[in-house]
Image (tube, rainbow, N blue to C red; front, top):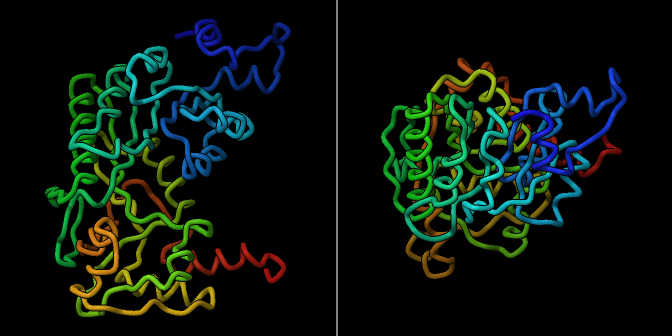
Length: 322
């Protein structure tokens, strides 16, 4: 797809500049094109890392989000991943794609990723953000990316379906696919403060589960490295170096913000006072190795543990102290 075709298909991207001019827009037109599907919080953190290297197109289905995308340096595209016909004009737009969009809330298949796979070009480079939940419950064992998936709920089943859909596309289209299995994402504005204020209980140490974490800014950096350095059809654990149980994470956040630690209950008692969805998160225990992330993508985490991330969050909240 050439520049004239892009301008016709996406009028917001059109421009006019004198012949030979080196305006910012003209320079942007010469960059390789990159498409982001689902540009929420992590996508917005990623845009500053991309816009000097790529001409970025960002898909959203929310018209109110288009101005923010444009201000961040992306060409916003209004489209609905639930409707294959609305994605037709994206076909061939970019040979670099970062897929951040979540699957539908119901069912065992990710129809959105199936729709996306229909418009991916031959030999494209694709990075897909999946979840560590695809492993199910590992009883706290430490595993690497060779561990077989064993999804235990609909959320994880849909992610496994998305991974399989993209693997099938990559095999048939000679594509280069990197799958990031991502745990709980945190940042200064993504902490369980409301839960702590509400006094939602956590599990007793004997019943508690291991969880994994990644700071949103580190995840953005990992996405860029996976696009640039990811090996074909490769899975990476996008996790930090923390080895924390879930209640210990809540305690760490509470201590950092001067809040009361959550009360601890046995699993049987907790099941009576929390939602089934929340209980499902507290029923899977696993620890994930990140050696492949560091060795192959050459990532140095800015926040290697939750402790560093919380310190940064506090500095952000009180900049006059830093």
